[in-house]
View (cartoon, helix red, strand yellow):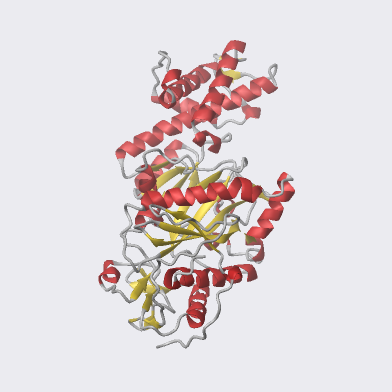
Length: 495
């Protein structure tokens, strides 16, 4: 099968990919406001002939392996690929092999006339476990990736328990200090548990900064930790009514000041502390599932550990407890990213992204409601209002930010630089794990979340991201992205 193509000019407004990284390459990036450069060192093969495998065309009807069978990719992506190839690529005898899940046979069959939409070992980036291990291997743990632990490894389970204790201690000290400062006459605290929490934070500060080390240590039993966890779950209004201990009362002024300084010190030394609010919520995810499958939000240590024992192949990751909300609803940012080369590393960021909104109001008191905490379309698509009300375009989001902040360009000044840095650093971390082949490329879906201080956090990276045409602006974005992807990968049009 050969698609006839009519030549057409490439206009600037059809070039929305911005080059954000060119590692080990002296050629300049093409970024908004920085200027443009045309790079001619990409392979220039055209693609027109469709590769047939089994009974389907894998370029037009991509498939994925699932329980030994094939499951079709979303119709929107199929249509966008077909239209872009039909319009852009004359018959040159080259092949485009597009699949949603790869195997070794795909790489073994590649030749110089075939483009393939995956890099070997991409799961080191595109599974939850793979991303965790890849970023864990960085010289310094990325401050923008929430603390994450693999329950298959005993050492990481132990590290998780240690961090759970530290976060519980931080919550206790921060909450009781705030309550005591706001209402000094009406606040009564568990002083014994506060001493335990203070000692825990002091040891944590010592690990973060050796100059903060003190000799004080405290013998802690499991029952004491259990009491601290229970105490951490109390709201400020419950401190006076639900305490059962003879060692309770107001915090002495000198200790109050020391604890206040300790909270500020931990916050400055550990960016992860900004994830906390007044809970110790963690999100437990299967190693290699997608679309929100079997993801649970949990608060109690015993519940998290029990879930890990039952499922085994899960990770526990710190939950962003204070997300930025749109109309009281949680959302994440889906950003399309294209890698065209591993050696040297060439990464392109699509000029637009979109927001995926949860269907229900954000509620930390109901961790079991997935539509309140997970923004995956597969979870939130069961209502009449879930289509138009479930996504927001970047221009709409920029207008919303201006309304909320009163600033002209919050996105460009405060958010976009973080996004570019996270994408680049993540791809750079995975570079040594991906296998370079001249004709391989890959499209990824980066999912990120903003907290209430506009700090950006990486949640996960998706291979063959679902590209649904559920709104008019998403349909236009998908066709623009697909067109530019083929122009960049196959025609070397990277201006």
